[in-house]
Image (cartoon, rainbow, N blue to C red; front, side, top):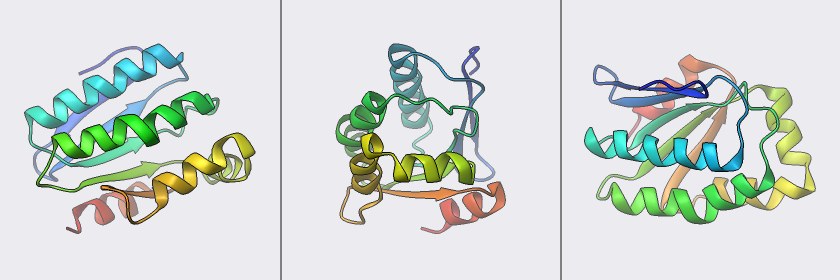
Length: 136
């Protein structure tokens, strides 16, 4: 499924949903992208997601707040009994900026905490991301 902002591809051979954003977008557009991503994942009963956000450099802290506290917990509940695994493919530059930006720090820490109903890990190599997602 393609739009100008992203592509969503289910890879049955890997058991992974791959979402690649091609550009930054407004908060409502990204929220719609996330909802579509969940619908495709539910259709394929897929709780392993590779999220390629390398081209989304200017993400609004509101998206981080919404995704971490609202969207990912809802997605995790919908995909039970599987545990939602999110492999975020990011550049080191962007990840360091998010980790050190006070507006994003609390959301990054929240999403990476192991007690969440979903697992998140950040990578800068697609092969490593895929291998991590396939461990279950």
